[in-house]
Length: 428
Length: 176
View (tube, each protein chain N blue to C red):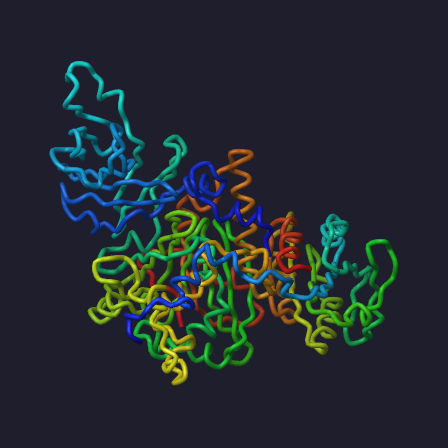
Protein backbone atom coordinates (compact mmCIF):
# COMPACT_ATOMS: atom_id res chain seq x y z
CA UNK A 1 0.00 0.00 0.00
CA UNK A 2 1.13 3.50 -0.76
CA UNK A 3 -0.44 6.77 0.21
CA UNK A 4 -1.80 8.86 -2.65
CA UNK A 5 0.98 11.40 -2.07
CA UNK A 6 3.75 8.83 -2.44
CA UNK A 7 2.00 7.19 -5.37
CA UNK A 8 1.86 10.55 -7.12
CA UNK A 9 5.51 11.21 -6.32
CA UNK A 10 6.61 7.92 -7.87
CA UNK A 11 4.36 7.90 -10.91
CA UNK A 12 4.45 11.49 -12.19
CA UNK A 13 7.33 12.29 -14.51
CA UNK A 14 6.42 15.54 -16.23
CA UNK A 15 8.99 18.37 -16.05
CA UNK A 16 9.34 19.74 -12.55
CA UNK A 17 8.11 16.63 -10.74
CA UNK A 18 10.53 14.82 -8.39
CA UNK A 19 10.45 11.57 -10.35
CA UNK A 20 10.55 13.47 -13.63
CA UNK A 21 13.66 15.25 -12.43
CA UNK A 22 15.13 11.92 -11.43
CA UNK A 23 14.57 10.31 -14.84
CA UNK A 24 16.26 13.35 -16.31
CA UNK A 25 19.49 12.39 -14.55
CA UNK A 26 19.94 9.34 -16.79
CA UNK A 27 20.59 8.44 -20.39
CA UNK A 28 17.33 6.78 -21.43
CA UNK A 29 16.30 4.95 -24.61
CA UNK A 30 14.46 7.32 -26.93
CA UNK A 31 14.11 5.55 -30.27
CA UNK A 32 15.25 2.47 -32.08
CA UNK A 33 18.08 3.47 -34.38
CA UNK A 34 16.19 1.98 -37.31
CA UNK A 35 13.48 4.63 -36.87
CA UNK A 36 15.94 7.14 -38.34
CA UNK A 37 17.53 4.87 -40.94
CA UNK A 38 19.38 7.38 -43.11
CA UNK A 39 20.50 10.99 -43.42
CA UNK A 40 17.65 13.42 -44.18
CA UNK A 41 15.05 10.73 -43.50
CA UNK A 42 11.57 11.51 -42.24
CA UNK A 43 11.46 13.05 -38.76
CA UNK A 44 9.75 11.08 -36.00
CA UNK A 45 7.43 12.38 -33.30
CA UNK A 46 8.65 11.36 -29.85
CA UNK A 47 7.03 11.94 -26.49
CA UNK A 48 9.17 11.28 -23.42
CA UNK A 49 8.60 12.22 -19.79
CA UNK A 50 5.61 14.29 -20.84
CA UNK A 51 7.50 16.36 -23.42
CA UNK A 52 6.49 16.46 -27.09
CA UNK A 53 9.65 16.24 -29.21
CA UNK A 54 10.74 15.57 -32.75
CA UNK A 55 13.69 13.36 -33.66
CA UNK A 56 15.56 13.66 -36.92
CA UNK A 57 18.83 12.81 -38.61
CA UNK A 58 20.35 15.59 -40.63
CA UNK A 59 22.31 15.63 -43.87
CA UNK A 60 25.55 14.95 -42.01
CA UNK A 61 24.20 12.03 -39.99
CA UNK A 62 23.80 14.05 -36.81
CA UNK A 63 20.87 13.04 -34.62
CA UNK A 64 18.64 15.72 -33.13
CA UNK A 65 15.87 15.56 -30.53
CA UNK A 66 14.19 18.93 -30.26
CA UNK A 67 10.92 20.55 -29.24
CA UNK A 68 8.27 19.37 -31.70
CA UNK A 69 6.80 22.78 -32.34
CA UNK A 70 8.18 25.59 -34.44
CA UNK A 71 9.14 28.66 -32.42
CA UNK A 72 7.31 30.90 -34.90
CA UNK A 73 3.62 29.93 -34.84
CA UNK A 74 3.76 26.59 -33.07
CA UNK A 75 3.25 24.29 -36.05
CA UNK A 76 4.47 20.74 -35.64
CA UNK A 77 7.85 20.09 -37.16
CA UNK A 78 6.69 16.57 -37.98
CA UNK A 79 5.61 18.29 -41.21
CA UNK A 80 9.11 19.67 -41.56
CA UNK A 81 11.41 19.30 -44.53
CA UNK A 82 14.58 17.54 -43.43
CA UNK A 83 17.11 19.08 -45.77
CA UNK A 84 20.58 20.60 -45.98
CA UNK A 85 21.57 20.29 -42.36
CA UNK A 86 18.34 21.09 -40.62
CA UNK A 87 14.61 20.69 -40.22
CA UNK A 88 12.61 23.40 -41.98
CA UNK A 89 9.04 24.26 -40.99
CA UNK A 90 7.00 24.19 -44.18
CA UNK A 91 4.70 26.94 -42.96
CA UNK A 92 7.06 29.93 -43.25
CA UNK A 93 10.43 28.29 -43.82
CA UNK A 94 12.03 28.65 -40.40
CA UNK A 95 14.82 26.13 -40.09
CA UNK A 96 16.39 24.46 -37.04
CA UNK A 97 19.56 22.44 -36.65
CA UNK A 98 20.04 19.22 -34.67
CA UNK A 99 20.55 21.15 -31.42
CA UNK A 100 17.33 23.14 -31.86
CA UNK A 101 19.16 26.30 -32.85
CA UNK A 102 17.26 28.33 -35.43
CA UNK A 103 19.54 28.75 -38.44
CA UNK A 104 17.26 30.44 -40.92
CA UNK A 105 14.28 32.82 -40.84
CA UNK A 106 13.63 33.66 -44.50
CA UNK A 107 11.46 36.67 -43.77
CA UNK A 108 14.18 38.42 -41.75
CA UNK A 109 17.39 39.95 -43.11
CA UNK A 110 20.19 37.44 -42.71
CA UNK A 111 22.39 40.13 -41.25
CA UNK A 112 19.88 40.99 -38.52
CA UNK A 113 20.99 38.02 -36.43
CA UNK A 114 17.36 37.39 -35.55
CA UNK A 115 17.52 33.65 -36.00
CA UNK A 116 20.44 33.39 -33.58
CA UNK A 117 18.10 34.56 -30.84
CA UNK A 118 15.69 31.70 -31.46
CA UNK A 119 16.37 28.26 -30.05
CA UNK A 120 14.14 25.29 -29.44
CA UNK A 121 14.78 23.05 -26.47
CA UNK A 122 17.09 20.30 -27.67
CA UNK A 123 18.50 17.15 -26.17
CA UNK A 124 21.43 14.99 -27.27
CA UNK A 125 20.58 11.87 -29.21
CA UNK A 126 23.35 9.27 -29.38
CA UNK A 127 23.43 5.84 -31.00
CA UNK A 128 24.69 3.00 -28.86
CA UNK A 129 23.77 -0.46 -30.08
CA UNK A 130 20.33 -0.59 -31.68
CA UNK A 131 19.15 2.38 -29.65
CA UNK A 132 19.23 6.16 -29.80
CA UNK A 133 19.70 7.40 -26.23
CA UNK A 134 18.94 10.79 -24.83
CA UNK A 135 19.65 12.73 -21.66
CA UNK A 136 16.93 15.26 -20.86
CA UNK A 137 18.54 16.86 -17.82
CA UNK A 138 21.10 19.57 -17.19
CA UNK A 139 24.14 19.36 -19.42
CA UNK A 140 26.36 20.08 -16.44
CA UNK A 141 25.07 16.97 -14.67
CA UNK A 142 25.23 14.70 -17.71
CA UNK A 143 26.48 11.21 -16.79
CA UNK A 144 28.91 9.14 -18.81
CA UNK A 145 27.45 7.31 -21.79
CA UNK A 146 25.53 4.15 -20.88
CA UNK A 147 27.44 0.87 -20.93
CA UNK A 148 24.67 -1.72 -20.60
CA UNK A 149 26.02 -4.98 -21.93
CA UNK A 150 23.07 -5.69 -24.24
CA UNK A 151 23.73 -2.42 -26.04
CA UNK A 152 27.49 -2.76 -26.33
CA UNK A 153 27.99 -6.33 -27.57
CA UNK A 154 28.44 -6.76 -31.35
CA UNK A 155 25.26 -6.28 -33.37
CA UNK A 156 24.98 -9.96 -34.28
CA UNK A 157 24.72 -10.85 -30.59
CA UNK A 158 21.80 -8.63 -29.66
CA UNK A 159 18.19 -7.79 -30.51
CA UNK A 160 16.07 -4.95 -29.15
CA UNK A 161 12.41 -4.12 -29.58
CA UNK A 162 10.03 -1.64 -28.05
CA UNK A 163 6.30 -1.69 -27.54
CA UNK A 164 3.80 0.90 -26.48
CA UNK A 165 2.26 0.06 -23.13
CA UNK A 166 -0.88 1.97 -22.23
CA UNK A 167 -0.30 2.54 -18.53
CA UNK A 168 2.03 4.30 -16.13
CA UNK A 169 5.67 3.23 -16.16
CA UNK A 170 5.78 2.13 -12.52
CA UNK A 171 3.15 -0.59 -12.66
CA UNK A 172 4.82 -1.92 -15.80
CA UNK A 173 8.28 -1.85 -14.24
CA UNK A 174 7.07 -3.51 -11.06
CA UNK A 175 6.16 -6.54 -13.17
CA UNK A 176 9.83 -6.92 -13.99
CA UNK A 177 10.82 -7.34 -10.36
CA UNK A 178 7.78 -9.33 -9.31
CA UNK A 179 9.27 -12.79 -9.64
CA UNK A 180 6.35 -14.53 -7.98
CA UNK A 181 3.95 -14.01 -10.89
CA UNK A 182 6.02 -16.12 -13.25
CA UNK A 183 4.88 -19.42 -11.74
CA UNK A 184 1.32 -18.51 -12.63
CA UNK A 185 0.97 -16.06 -15.48
CA UNK A 186 3.80 -17.39 -17.64
CA UNK A 187 3.65 -21.03 -16.60
CA UNK A 188 2.32 -22.09 -19.99
CA UNK A 189 5.33 -20.69 -21.78
CA UNK A 190 8.16 -22.41 -19.97
CA UNK A 191 7.95 -25.57 -22.03
CA UNK A 192 6.69 -24.13 -25.29
CA UNK A 193 8.42 -20.82 -25.96
CA UNK A 194 11.43 -21.42 -28.20
CA UNK A 195 13.48 -18.95 -26.17
CA UNK A 196 12.82 -20.73 -22.85
CA UNK A 197 12.30 -24.41 -23.44
CA UNK A 198 14.89 -27.09 -22.90
CA UNK A 199 16.89 -25.34 -20.18
CA UNK A 200 18.17 -27.57 -17.41
CA UNK A 201 16.88 -25.24 -14.74
CA UNK A 202 13.27 -25.51 -15.94
CA UNK A 203 12.84 -28.77 -14.02
CA UNK A 204 13.39 -26.91 -10.75
CA UNK A 205 10.80 -24.31 -11.68
CA UNK A 206 8.26 -26.97 -12.51
CA UNK A 207 8.99 -29.11 -9.45
CA UNK A 208 8.92 -26.31 -6.87
CA UNK A 209 6.07 -23.88 -7.40
CA UNK A 210 6.64 -21.97 -4.18
CA UNK A 211 9.94 -20.15 -4.45
CA UNK A 212 11.40 -18.38 -1.46
CA UNK A 213 12.55 -14.83 -2.01
CA UNK A 214 15.55 -12.89 -0.83
CA UNK A 215 15.86 -9.19 -1.55
CA UNK A 216 19.27 -7.61 -1.22
CA UNK A 217 20.29 -4.06 -2.03
CA UNK A 218 23.01 -3.40 -4.55
CA UNK A 219 24.84 -0.14 -5.14
CA UNK A 220 22.70 0.56 -8.19
CA UNK A 221 19.42 -0.91 -7.04
CA UNK A 222 18.47 -4.41 -5.98
CA UNK A 223 19.05 -8.08 -6.47
CA UNK A 224 15.92 -10.17 -6.11
CA UNK A 225 16.79 -13.81 -5.59
CA UNK A 226 14.17 -16.54 -5.97
CA UNK A 227 15.31 -19.90 -4.68
CA UNK A 228 13.80 -23.30 -5.26
CA UNK A 229 14.77 -26.68 -3.99
CA UNK A 230 17.35 -28.45 -6.12
CA UNK A 231 19.30 -31.60 -5.38
CA UNK A 232 20.03 -32.48 -1.76
CA UNK A 233 21.46 -29.59 0.26
CA UNK A 234 21.26 -27.26 -2.74
CA UNK A 235 19.07 -24.43 -3.93
CA UNK A 236 18.35 -23.37 -7.50
CA UNK A 237 18.66 -19.58 -7.54
CA UNK A 238 17.23 -17.20 -10.10
CA UNK A 239 18.57 -13.70 -9.51
CA UNK A 240 17.00 -10.60 -11.05
CA UNK A 241 18.95 -7.34 -10.95
CA UNK A 242 17.07 -4.07 -10.91
CA UNK A 243 19.06 -0.92 -11.60
CA UNK A 244 17.52 2.45 -10.91
CA UNK A 245 15.32 3.80 -12.18
CA UNK A 246 13.83 1.18 -14.48
CA UNK A 247 16.24 -1.45 -15.82
CA UNK A 248 15.62 -5.12 -15.11
CA UNK A 249 17.02 -8.39 -16.39
CA UNK A 250 15.35 -11.78 -16.40
CA UNK A 251 17.48 -14.65 -15.11
CA UNK A 252 18.79 -16.77 -18.00
CA UNK A 253 17.69 -20.22 -19.05
CA UNK A 254 20.30 -22.61 -20.37
CA UNK A 255 22.23 -21.13 -23.27
CA UNK A 256 19.26 -19.15 -24.52
CA UNK A 257 19.82 -15.41 -25.01
CA UNK A 258 19.43 -13.32 -21.86
CA UNK A 259 16.55 -10.89 -21.81
CA UNK A 260 15.53 -7.79 -19.95
CA UNK A 261 13.75 -4.49 -20.06
CA UNK A 262 13.75 -0.76 -19.68
CA UNK A 263 10.48 0.99 -18.83
CA UNK A 264 10.50 4.58 -19.95
CA UNK A 265 7.63 7.01 -19.33
CA UNK A 266 6.01 8.52 -22.42
CA UNK A 267 3.66 10.46 -20.18
CA UNK A 268 1.96 9.57 -16.93
CA UNK A 269 -0.48 7.18 -18.61
CA UNK A 270 1.75 5.55 -21.24
CA UNK A 271 5.23 4.09 -21.34
CA UNK A 272 7.64 2.34 -23.65
CA UNK A 273 8.46 -1.21 -22.72
CA UNK A 274 11.91 -1.72 -24.18
CA UNK A 275 12.84 -5.39 -24.45
CA UNK A 276 16.17 -6.90 -25.35
CA UNK A 277 17.74 -10.28 -25.87
CA UNK A 278 21.45 -10.82 -26.22
CA UNK A 279 24.11 -13.41 -25.76
CA UNK A 280 27.35 -12.22 -24.17
CA UNK A 281 29.65 -14.46 -26.18
CA UNK A 282 28.06 -15.63 -29.41
CA UNK A 283 25.94 -14.44 -32.30
CA UNK A 284 22.23 -15.09 -32.06
CA UNK A 285 21.30 -18.04 -34.24
CA UNK A 286 19.02 -17.69 -37.24
CA UNK A 287 16.32 -19.56 -35.34
CA UNK A 288 16.66 -17.31 -32.31
CA UNK A 289 16.48 -14.14 -34.36
CA UNK A 290 13.45 -15.41 -36.21
CA UNK A 291 11.75 -16.22 -32.91
CA UNK A 292 12.58 -12.77 -31.52
CA UNK A 293 11.25 -11.02 -34.59
CA UNK A 294 8.13 -13.18 -34.48
CA UNK A 295 7.34 -11.91 -30.98
CA UNK A 296 8.39 -14.84 -28.84
CA UNK A 297 10.14 -14.54 -25.50
CA UNK A 298 9.63 -11.08 -24.00
CA UNK A 299 8.85 -9.48 -27.37
CA UNK A 300 5.50 -9.22 -29.15
CA UNK A 301 3.68 -9.14 -32.46
CA UNK A 302 2.67 -5.69 -33.70
CA UNK A 303 -0.13 -3.95 -35.47
CA UNK A 304 1.68 -3.64 -38.82
CA UNK A 305 3.65 -0.44 -39.18
CA UNK A 306 3.37 0.49 -35.52
CA UNK A 307 4.88 -0.24 -32.11
CA UNK A 308 1.46 -1.10 -30.71
CA UNK A 309 1.07 -4.78 -29.84
CA UNK A 310 -1.21 -6.69 -32.17
CA UNK A 311 -2.97 -7.88 -29.04
CA UNK A 312 -4.14 -4.72 -27.34
CA UNK A 313 -7.03 -3.43 -25.29
CA UNK A 314 -9.05 -2.61 -28.40
CA UNK A 315 -9.36 -6.32 -29.16
CA UNK A 316 -9.35 -7.54 -25.56
CA UNK A 317 -5.77 -8.73 -26.13
CA UNK A 318 -7.26 -11.46 -28.33
CA UNK A 319 -8.29 -13.35 -25.24
CA UNK A 320 -8.62 -17.06 -26.01
CA UNK A 321 -10.59 -18.78 -23.27
CA UNK A 322 -10.37 -22.11 -25.06
CA UNK A 323 -6.55 -21.99 -25.04
CA UNK A 324 -6.81 -21.24 -21.34
CA UNK A 325 -8.99 -24.30 -20.79
CA UNK A 326 -6.66 -26.46 -22.84
CA UNK A 327 -3.77 -25.36 -20.66
CA UNK A 328 -1.81 -23.75 -23.48
CA UNK A 329 -1.81 -20.41 -21.70
CA UNK A 330 -2.57 -19.63 -18.10
CA UNK A 331 -4.47 -16.41 -18.67
CA UNK A 332 -5.79 -17.05 -22.15
CA UNK A 333 -3.44 -14.42 -23.60
CA UNK A 334 -0.71 -15.42 -26.06
CA UNK A 335 2.87 -14.38 -25.36
CA UNK A 336 4.74 -13.32 -22.27
CA UNK A 337 4.88 -9.60 -23.07
CA UNK A 338 1.15 -9.17 -23.53
CA UNK A 339 0.33 -11.53 -20.69
CA UNK A 340 2.02 -8.90 -18.56
CA UNK A 341 0.79 -5.76 -20.29
CA UNK A 342 -2.84 -6.92 -20.42
CA UNK A 343 -2.98 -7.19 -16.64
CA UNK A 344 -0.89 -4.09 -15.99
CA UNK A 345 -3.08 -1.99 -18.29
CA UNK A 346 -6.19 -3.40 -16.61
CA UNK A 347 -5.07 -1.74 -13.36
CA UNK A 348 -5.95 1.59 -14.99
CA UNK A 349 -3.76 4.29 -16.49
CA UNK A 350 -2.15 4.94 -13.09
CA UNK A 351 -2.59 2.15 -10.57
CA UNK A 352 -4.30 3.19 -7.34
CA UNK A 353 -1.92 1.77 -4.77
CA UNK A 354 -3.95 2.98 -1.82
CA UNK A 355 -6.21 -0.05 -2.24
CA UNK A 356 -3.66 -2.78 -2.79
CA UNK A 357 -2.86 -5.47 -0.24
CA UNK A 358 0.78 -6.40 -0.64
CA UNK A 359 2.14 -9.55 0.95
CA UNK A 360 5.62 -10.36 2.12
CA UNK A 361 6.63 -11.93 -1.20
CA UNK A 362 6.17 -8.46 -2.68
CA UNK A 363 9.23 -7.19 -0.85
CA UNK A 364 11.12 -6.64 -4.10
CA UNK A 365 8.45 -4.17 -5.15
CA UNK A 366 8.32 -2.59 -1.70
CA UNK A 367 12.08 -2.12 -1.62
CA UNK A 368 12.21 -0.72 -5.16
CA UNK A 369 9.56 1.87 -4.32
CA UNK A 370 11.42 2.71 -1.13
CA UNK A 371 14.68 3.28 -2.97
CA UNK A 372 13.02 5.29 -5.75
CA UNK A 373 11.29 7.49 -3.24
CA UNK A 374 14.43 8.07 -1.21
CA UNK A 375 16.47 8.87 -4.30
CA UNK A 376 13.86 11.25 -5.72
CA UNK A 377 13.56 13.09 -2.42
CA UNK A 378 17.34 13.26 -1.95
CA UNK A 379 17.69 14.73 -5.43
CA UNK A 380 14.89 17.22 -4.84
CA UNK A 381 15.95 18.32 -1.38
CA UNK A 382 19.72 17.98 -1.46
CA UNK A 383 20.72 17.63 -5.08
CA UNK A 384 22.11 14.15 -4.50
CA UNK A 385 22.57 12.25 -7.76
CA UNK A 386 20.65 8.96 -7.79
CA UNK A 387 22.20 5.50 -8.20
CA UNK A 388 22.32 3.79 -11.58
CA UNK A 389 24.14 6.53 -13.50
CA UNK A 390 27.64 5.10 -13.37
CA UNK A 391 29.10 2.19 -15.28
CA UNK A 392 29.79 0.17 -12.14
CA UNK A 393 26.04 0.07 -11.53
CA UNK A 394 25.20 -0.74 -15.14
CA UNK A 395 27.58 -3.65 -15.69
CA UNK A 396 25.25 -6.21 -14.15
CA UNK A 397 23.95 -9.59 -15.23
CA UNK A 398 21.12 -11.80 -14.17
CA UNK A 399 22.06 -15.27 -12.93
CA UNK A 400 20.63 -18.77 -12.66
CA UNK A 401 22.74 -21.05 -10.52
CA UNK A 402 22.62 -24.01 -8.15
CA UNK A 403 24.31 -23.25 -4.82
CA UNK A 404 24.85 -25.02 -1.53
CA UNK A 405 22.09 -24.06 0.86
CA UNK A 406 24.35 -22.21 3.26
CA UNK A 407 25.73 -19.72 0.72
CA UNK A 408 24.30 -16.18 0.42
CA UNK A 409 23.69 -15.63 -3.27
CA UNK A 410 25.07 -12.11 -3.35
CA UNK A 411 28.47 -13.30 -2.19
CA UNK A 412 28.49 -16.65 -3.95
CA UNK A 413 27.45 -15.07 -7.27
CA UNK A 414 29.42 -11.86 -7.01
CA UNK A 415 31.37 -12.49 -10.23
CA UNK A 416 28.38 -14.00 -12.02
CA UNK A 417 26.32 -10.88 -11.32
CA UNK A 418 28.93 -8.69 -12.99
CA UNK A 419 29.60 -8.27 -16.70
CA UNK A 420 32.75 -10.12 -17.67
CA UNK A 421 33.62 -9.54 -21.32
CA UNK A 422 34.18 -12.80 -23.17
CA UNK A 423 32.60 -14.87 -20.41
CA UNK A 424 29.13 -16.25 -21.00
CA UNK A 425 26.24 -15.81 -18.62
CA UNK A 426 25.93 -18.03 -15.57
CA UNK A 427 22.95 -20.21 -16.27
CA UNK A 428 21.42 -23.62 -15.70
CA UNK B 1 -4.56 -16.54 -30.85
CA UNK B 2 -8.16 -15.49 -31.09
CA UNK B 3 -9.58 -13.14 -33.69
CA UNK B 4 -7.97 -9.70 -33.55
CA UNK B 5 -11.12 -7.95 -34.74
CA UNK B 6 -13.68 -7.70 -31.96
CA UNK B 7 -16.52 -5.25 -31.46
CA UNK B 8 -15.96 -2.85 -28.58
CA UNK B 9 -18.65 -3.33 -26.01
CA UNK B 10 -19.34 -1.74 -22.66
CA UNK B 11 -17.39 -4.46 -20.88
CA UNK B 12 -14.44 -4.39 -23.28
CA UNK B 13 -10.93 -3.66 -22.07
CA UNK B 14 -10.81 -0.62 -24.35
CA UNK B 15 -13.39 1.08 -22.17
CA UNK B 16 -12.79 -0.59 -18.85
CA UNK B 17 -9.11 0.41 -18.59
CA UNK B 18 -9.64 4.14 -19.03
CA UNK B 19 -9.14 6.81 -16.39
CA UNK B 20 -12.78 7.78 -16.79
CA UNK B 21 -13.90 4.32 -15.79
CA UNK B 22 -11.54 4.22 -12.80
CA UNK B 23 -13.89 6.49 -10.87
CA UNK B 24 -16.56 3.82 -10.94
CA UNK B 25 -14.46 1.36 -9.03
CA UNK B 26 -16.34 0.23 -5.95
CA UNK B 27 -15.11 2.10 -2.91
CA UNK B 28 -15.01 -0.03 0.22
CA UNK B 29 -12.39 -1.52 2.55
CA UNK B 30 -11.31 -4.69 0.77
CA UNK B 31 -9.31 -6.22 3.59
CA UNK B 32 -9.52 -6.78 7.30
CA UNK B 33 -6.79 -5.52 9.58
CA UNK B 34 -3.70 -7.64 9.30
CA UNK B 35 -2.31 -9.18 12.45
CA UNK B 36 1.41 -8.52 12.35
CA UNK B 37 3.99 -9.36 14.96
CA UNK B 38 7.46 -7.83 14.81
CA UNK B 39 10.21 -9.45 16.88
CA UNK B 40 13.49 -7.63 17.38
CA UNK B 41 16.12 -10.29 17.89
CA UNK B 42 18.97 -8.08 19.10
CA UNK B 43 19.63 -4.70 20.66
CA UNK B 44 20.35 -2.79 17.44
CA UNK B 45 17.21 -4.18 15.88
CA UNK B 46 15.25 -3.21 18.99
CA UNK B 47 16.50 0.37 18.73
CA UNK B 48 15.40 0.58 15.11
CA UNK B 49 12.04 -0.87 16.06
CA UNK B 50 11.46 1.38 19.06
CA UNK B 51 12.01 4.40 16.84
CA UNK B 52 8.76 3.65 15.05
CA UNK B 53 6.47 1.99 17.54
CA UNK B 54 4.62 5.22 18.30
CA UNK B 55 3.41 5.57 14.72
CA UNK B 56 -0.27 4.81 14.11
CA UNK B 57 0.06 1.17 13.08
CA UNK B 58 -2.79 -1.03 12.06
CA UNK B 59 -2.62 -3.34 15.05
CA UNK B 60 0.98 -4.47 14.77
CA UNK B 61 2.66 -5.64 17.98
CA UNK B 62 6.31 -4.91 18.58
CA UNK B 63 8.27 -7.27 20.78
CA UNK B 64 11.85 -7.65 21.86
CA UNK B 65 13.67 -10.84 22.71
CA UNK B 66 15.26 -9.90 26.01
CA UNK B 67 17.55 -12.82 26.68
CA UNK B 68 21.21 -11.90 26.85
CA UNK B 69 22.56 -15.40 26.40
CA UNK B 70 22.20 -17.89 23.59
CA UNK B 71 18.82 -19.53 23.28
CA UNK B 72 18.96 -23.31 22.84
CA UNK B 73 15.93 -24.07 20.71
CA UNK B 74 15.53 -27.68 21.73
CA UNK B 75 15.49 -26.67 25.36
CA UNK B 76 13.25 -23.64 24.99
CA UNK B 77 9.52 -24.08 25.13
CA UNK B 78 7.20 -21.69 23.35
CA UNK B 79 6.59 -19.55 26.42
CA UNK B 80 10.10 -19.84 27.81
CA UNK B 81 11.41 -17.25 25.38
CA UNK B 82 11.67 -13.95 27.24
CA UNK B 83 9.79 -11.25 25.34
CA UNK B 84 8.93 -7.72 26.24
CA UNK B 85 6.66 -5.05 24.78
CA UNK B 86 7.85 -1.47 24.16
CA UNK B 87 6.66 -0.43 27.63
CA UNK B 88 8.72 -3.18 29.22
CA UNK B 89 5.88 -5.54 30.00
CA UNK B 90 6.56 -9.25 29.53
CA UNK B 91 4.76 -11.08 26.76
CA UNK B 92 4.09 -14.72 25.90
CA UNK B 93 4.92 -16.02 22.44
CA UNK B 94 1.90 -18.33 22.41
CA UNK B 95 -0.45 -15.42 23.00
CA UNK B 96 1.28 -13.10 20.58
CA UNK B 97 1.05 -15.62 17.75
CA UNK B 98 -2.61 -16.27 18.34
CA UNK B 99 -4.37 -15.24 15.14
CA UNK B 100 -1.26 -13.65 13.64
CA UNK B 101 -0.96 -13.43 9.83
CA UNK B 102 2.66 -12.48 9.52
CA UNK B 103 5.75 -12.68 11.73
CA UNK B 104 8.65 -10.38 11.04
CA UNK B 105 12.02 -11.29 12.51
CA UNK B 106 14.06 -8.13 12.75
CA UNK B 107 17.77 -8.62 13.19
CA UNK B 108 20.84 -6.50 12.97
CA UNK B 109 24.38 -7.34 13.86
CA UNK B 110 23.65 -10.33 16.02
CA UNK B 111 21.73 -13.24 14.69
CA UNK B 112 20.30 -14.69 17.90
CA UNK B 113 19.71 -17.87 15.93
CA UNK B 114 18.17 -19.78 18.77
CA UNK B 115 15.49 -17.20 19.41
CA UNK B 116 14.77 -16.92 15.68
CA UNK B 117 14.30 -20.66 15.50
CA UNK B 118 11.94 -20.79 18.47
CA UNK B 119 9.71 -18.08 17.01
CA UNK B 120 9.88 -19.32 13.43
CA UNK B 121 9.23 -22.92 14.46
CA UNK B 122 6.07 -21.93 16.24
CA UNK B 123 4.99 -19.70 13.39
CA UNK B 124 5.55 -22.58 10.97
CA UNK B 125 3.40 -24.90 13.04
CA UNK B 126 0.64 -22.30 12.97
CA UNK B 127 1.00 -21.66 9.21
CA UNK B 128 2.05 -18.09 9.74
CA UNK B 129 4.18 -16.42 7.08
CA UNK B 130 7.62 -15.54 8.46
CA UNK B 131 9.71 -12.73 7.05
CA UNK B 132 13.32 -12.05 7.98
CA UNK B 133 14.50 -8.46 7.79
CA UNK B 134 18.19 -7.86 8.38
CA UNK B 135 19.38 -4.32 8.90
CA UNK B 136 22.84 -3.90 7.49
CA UNK B 137 23.41 -0.30 8.56
CA UNK B 138 26.84 -0.06 10.13
CA UNK B 139 27.49 -3.79 9.91
CA UNK B 140 30.19 -5.53 7.91
CA UNK B 141 29.24 -7.77 4.97
CA UNK B 142 30.53 -10.75 6.90
CA UNK B 143 28.30 -9.96 9.83
CA UNK B 144 25.26 -9.45 7.61
CA UNK B 145 25.96 -12.70 5.78
CA UNK B 146 26.20 -14.53 9.07
CA UNK B 147 22.85 -13.16 10.19
CA UNK B 148 21.23 -13.91 6.82
CA UNK B 149 22.51 -17.48 6.89
CA UNK B 150 21.05 -17.91 10.32
CA UNK B 151 17.61 -16.64 9.34
CA UNK B 152 17.41 -18.37 5.97
CA UNK B 153 16.12 -21.76 7.17
CA UNK B 154 13.31 -20.17 9.13
CA UNK B 155 11.91 -17.54 6.78
CA UNK B 156 9.86 -17.59 3.60
CA UNK B 157 11.05 -14.15 2.58
CA UNK B 158 14.35 -12.61 3.54
CA UNK B 159 15.29 -8.98 3.05
CA UNK B 160 18.59 -7.23 3.65
CA UNK B 161 18.13 -3.47 3.98
CA UNK B 162 20.96 -1.00 4.19
CA UNK B 163 19.06 1.54 6.25
CA UNK B 164 16.63 1.44 9.15
CA UNK B 165 14.08 3.51 7.20
CA UNK B 166 13.07 0.34 5.46
CA UNK B 167 11.40 -0.99 8.59
CA UNK B 168 8.53 1.53 8.57
CA UNK B 169 8.42 1.47 4.76
CA UNK B 170 7.88 -2.27 4.71
CA UNK B 171 5.42 -2.30 7.58
CA UNK B 172 3.37 0.46 5.96
CA UNK B 173 3.34 -1.35 2.64
CA UNK B 174 2.11 -4.49 4.37
CA UNK B 175 -0.56 -2.57 6.31
CA UNK B 176 0.98 -3.82 9.55
